[in-house]
Image 1 (cartoon, rainbow, N blue to C red):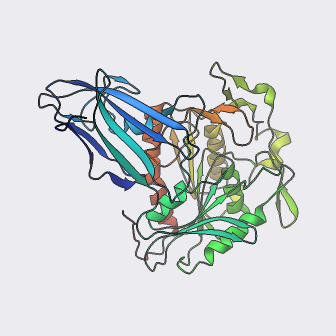
Image 2: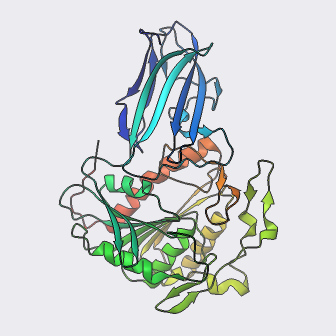
Image 3: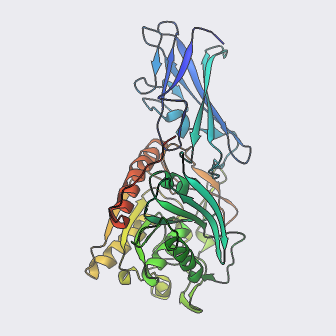
Length: 414
């Protein structure tokens, strides 16, 4: 490495996962052409890489906030492009970063055209800020992880329904001043015979019993299969004040839903004859879900019109997992028909199914957790990343608006 060439990560090489950094290089020759690279290994040991070609200015400097990539994993000005475009060598790989105690480690390096490394720096992207408490929970039917912000509170409470266990979103919300219980919809192999809404009600009651939780009701944040569970909690269980529904379904998907030992929603099923294979080996399953508006499926539609809480509906128009935009339109239409005004809705035209907290690698396709074959998630990478950034702030504002009792909020920093 060249001693006079420096690669900076500003304002610090250590930050929270959802915070941007500024990547700068200095000490190059005037107008020198170099390649910037990023690499990271996920929790399953899979290596992800990205690269972009940049030309230094007249002073021998490069600033990713200002300068365009000329070629590589992306082109144009994209300050966090090296992060969002991290990609594995093999197809259909999702970047697993789901354990809150371990930072997302990214190595940045700058190379001359012949490939020799000139400088490098490592970015530590932490999921938990200083003072946030993480407690694994196994109590009755509640099995998840509780995150509590520093300070006395009281804080608003949020149930984070992840399809399969992930601590990412919950820990990041705790940094913002929420008490959050990360709860998987499926702990082990899904039981296709029945799902009990009572188990999720128990989780809500557990959250409400926490000493730092305020007296307002609980919020629920969800995506995909978690979406119809969140809607069902709002419709059938008291105390749900706010629901964030991201790219879910308006009907109960796949498994009969029971409450108080009675089936309350029949399952909306799939027609696998409508799965569309692609050249990459991943499948488009969007059209395989049966129509919830068909007469024979009306028993699967969640009666959200009987809910008292507030909804934030979020749909990606390039969701290739299912018709999230169509489901959103149906729900908005039903609520309006019933004279309800307890909802907001957002659509993102070029985003895909996997809307997550910002600055993670974009995943266009991966192995489906329930179907066990690769599926296409959709999304134009740059537009998808912009949607994640916009939505992340919108979620926080929505939850604070409907869950806060005006107590002082704290925000965790590193």
